[in-house]
Structure formats: structure tokens, C-alpha cells
Image (cartoon, rainbow, N blue to C red; front, top):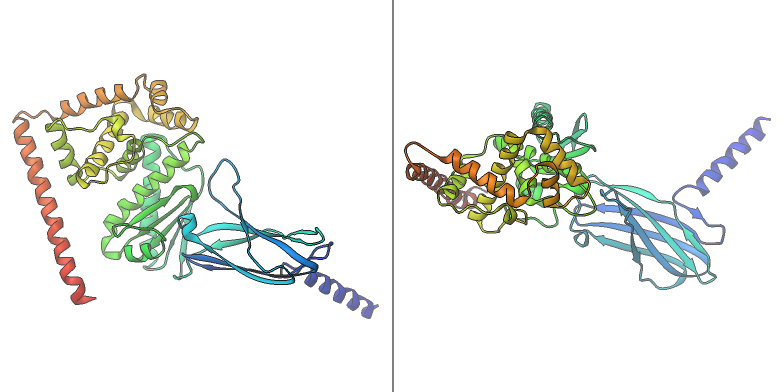
Length: 405
């Protein structure tokens, strides 16, 4: 009896080995003996496949999909170029530049289909891989819908950033009604340089980025720049929350509303932006609301003014019409309303009406008993001081780095 039991156990073990993911036997004769994927973050994923058949294998295709937020499942299909044979062993590399790069932590499902000369078809089972940034030894901290990953700094450092994140979520909901509808991941790199090394495409000034379709934020926060890092987290977090609240199949919300909500979430407008806004009001050179609905100008001065005006517009809407109206506005956009349609439905005026009301509001707030000229001069002096200070710091950095790196 014992011998019979041992034979049954051995047969079961052999059957398990045959049916394991490493070897998939199709009933029609195609056998896959190797099926692996190696992540080369952030530039590539290498896929390997070995298979044999009773007749020549004539067609091999790789299929893959990501956990990207979308209204329809999108599957990519790759036609593999190979020499037809009864015994094939292939390697194909996915160049992540084709996808614009992916953030760390993305889940990728992939599978193969193979056809031979007899018409036999085999589709392998889907395998899930985690597109991780394995260049660092990550630690994690989870609270609610937020998971924070970091590798440099102690638990207190991560706890402080998590506290900032949770407080920002509370303030966003109180002020705008916006809240997370899906869990998000927050990756904290030890520096802007480390962050940029994790990206395919980045600018030399990139310090943080929100991958809205993947519910992921990546930010480079050095220990000496924690105050900036907290504001950056809040800003990018607001982008993710706003995206989740308004995502629809018809289009994006106005740029000024998206950026303005993130600027507003940071707290009081920084002095450099306030100075730019003050000058624009005094000179009557404000950009129209419709002009701010498209991507902002690449020119630095106009870009700063665009962000400052966006903050002011959102502040105006919340202070004058309340949180409930802002929450309704975001919900209306999620239903696919147009820019004018959403504002008409919630506030009773379109973008042109908003532009007129807001201009009157900021001009009235800019009135000063000492006169507009004095008010403008103060703003100009503040802006000059800030720009000069930034220039001095930049010059010092350019001198210091070659001598100390």
C-alpha cells in the first residue's frame, strides 16, 4: 500500500512538472520549453521563448498589456521576425522609448501565440511581471490609498512625507470635494539626478512627475530640500486626484483648472508668482481664461504668469462659489461636458463670463490707497530680487560643481 501511494505521489509530481509554466504542451503538438522576461529598467524588457513542433513553426507573436487607466483594454501585438523551423529559440527586446517610458511598479501581462505549418495554434497563459526599478533597495510605507516607496533616509523621513501626503488629501477634499478613487504609488528618489536616471525622456530641470494614467508619482527629494519636496508631492498628488475625478473619453479639463488646483493645494501662492501676477494686473496684461485653457507658453515669463493666474482663478471660484460648486464642476467634466458647457451647468456662465468676473475681482483686490504705481513698484522690486538671487545661485552652482564633484 505504501509503495502504491509513493508511486501515485511520484506520478502527480511528474504531472505537475509537465504542466508548470516552464513547459506548456499543446494538444496539437507545439511545445514551449522556455518562456522568460527580464526587466532592464528603465530602457527595456527582454523576452525569451523556445519551442518545438512536429512541423515548422511559421508564426510567432508576442502580446502584452499594461495596467494603464483606460476605458478599453488595449493589447499590443508584436510580429516576431525569425527563421522558420521545427525548433525555435528567440529573443526580442521591447524598447521602452517606443512607449514613452513607464514609471516604476507598472504591471505588464504578456503571452505568446505560435502557429505551425499544419495550422496548429498555441496560446500560452498570460504571465504578469512587475516593471520595477531594481537599481535601488526600496522600502515601503502604506497608509490608506497611498503607498510610499523610498530608499534613502530613515523611517521618520518617510513618515514626514506620508503625513504631508495625507494632510494634502484632507485639504483637497475640504476645499474642492476632490478625493482619490483609486490607490496610488509614490516613489521618492534621493535626488533629481536619480529621478531623471529612471526616466527615458526628461528635462534637466525635471524634479517630479505625475504619471496620471498609472496612478504613480515619482519625485526626487534630497534631504536638504525637504520643504520643496513637500510642495512637489502636494502639487503632483493634486494632479492625480484631479485626473481621477475628471477622467473621461472625450477630453481633458482646461489646463488652467488642472494646474490651478495643484497650485492651490500647495497653500499660499509663492512670492515669485504673486509678484508676476501683481505686475500683470497693474499693467492690464492678463492672459484670457480661454488662452489659459490650452498648454502654457514655453517662455519663462509667460509660463510663470500662467501658473499664477491659474492659482488665482481657482482661488476665486472656491472663495466666491464654494467647495460644492467646485466638486460639481469636476463631476460634470467627468461626464464628458465641454469647457463652456461644464461652467454653464454649474456656475451659470461660460469661460468668457468667468474671464470678465475674475478680472473685475482681481482688479478690485489690487486697489491700494497708496496708488497702483507704488503697488507695482513693490512687486517689481520683489521680482528683481528673486530673479537676481536665482541667477547668483545658478552661477555659484556652475562654479562649485566642477571643483567639488
